[in-house]
Length: 206
Image 1 (cartoon, rainbow, N blue to C red):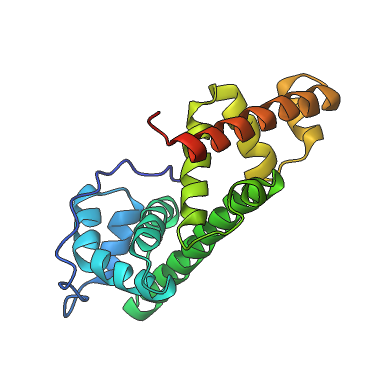
Image 2 (cartoon, helix red, strand yellow):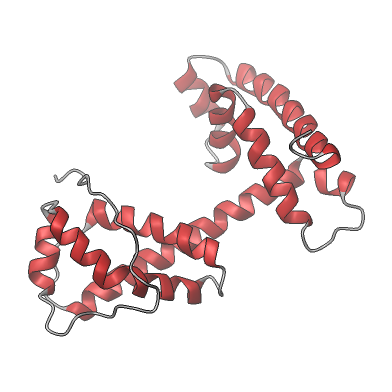
């Protein structure tokens, strides 16, 4: 089994540039990528970076930040699972499917963040008349508060609410009881609630 090649991602080419080069040898390119050849990856980025970004901008309905996040995930997944393709159209179909799934995964993660906020009724308490930026402010406050948690608490929250792991599995991995995990989660939830509300009330730099 091939391990994920360690390759440096170069700066992206100009957005308007790049389609597949006429006569590009896809078989050689993908075979070299599968072997972890860095030069092959540089050629791949030259050929496909902007094309994938344009495709993801369509998939995300013009949300550039979401498209770029999905693109980074796409590139990592390509590096992990690339294989030889003899036909460019099939290679592009494979790339497009990975990119589309990456965009869907990022969208689901975003909605899980918002569902996590709803779990604590923050929206109801802080935005009785929400404006268009309310959800973005809530998400930023949550992400910053999460980052300020100790590592073990942050990982516990991510496993329970974002990865949706079962409490039993978390307890087994931690060598504790389900009751112990639930008790710790309750304390963390209160800490997060207080932290997010404080940020929304006073601002992140106060």
